[in-house]
Length: 389
Image (cartoon, rainbow, N blue to C red; front, top):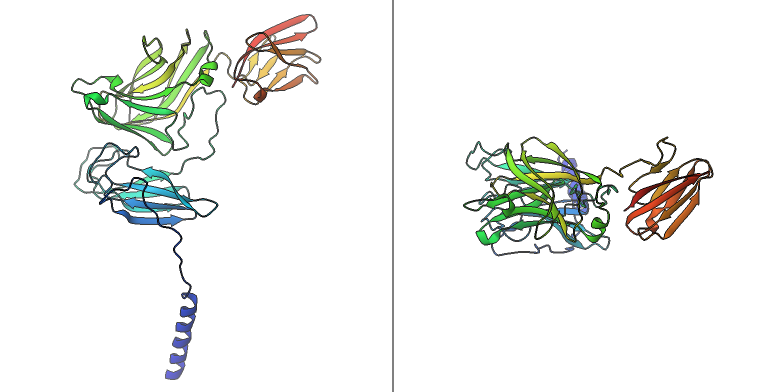
């Protein structure tokens, strides 16, 4: 019997030796793009599929390499590309980062989610209730690599789903010793002031989107616009100002509103009539009066005058869908109606005739801007404007 047990053990050892005798080959060595002495990159690591996360508990700086807080901590996401090369794709820090919390002490990644521990964090999720070194963990969701753009929204990256702040930018009155950070957390832009002036003013800290020439071309004087966005904050009644208008002297205002943001997410909506278009314009959120953070999401600026279905006739028998148009425009009208589209210079750019009550134009071939459309049926002519974007 003893011989039998020895034989079984010997076979098991042999099998294990065969199974685990495979050699692991070093594929690459990862380091942080902004590595520094004593960061402790690699404190914790985790890999899932083509992604890996590395914790750096002693890292001092935010995602922009500024706002130094000793041992605040961070984590780095790396992705393996089709050729097998691992590339750093994102640096992650806590939205409420503080000195000594050691964010990145523990990390894990699975599917679209990652969790990062901050072993020395003192406060609960809403701030306050401080318990020394109580610890906390933060869950992050991966951002969309192929965001769906709303063709009616003039604002770009208003949902922050790509994890990239651009084309938004952070402004601080740094000559007054003011510092702040703007990061994307779970598809939301979180703006955190670190220091404010002795006599703080709202404009000292801003998140701006400067409109491009293409965005300016979509604006129409006299049209009614709806600005909407979601917001929540670290504390209730967190003051902020939203501004839309001229970028630069004399700062002509098209919309300015003071708002108070609460801890629960709320949707804010403002309507205004655009009275003038300037060579330089911007949308701004100002938060320079307090050091508590605020988050924004789903920022939208839509022309309500030309949004969705546009009807040319009082009888509702001529419809343009959609307006604004991105890829194509459908014109619904009486059988045999002649449809003509002219650019802003009056040049005829497209014509068509309705068949079975419909004609379709490919508008992705046109330059962005306002066009005049004329629909002629029998002895009547109907005209209107369409927006191509």
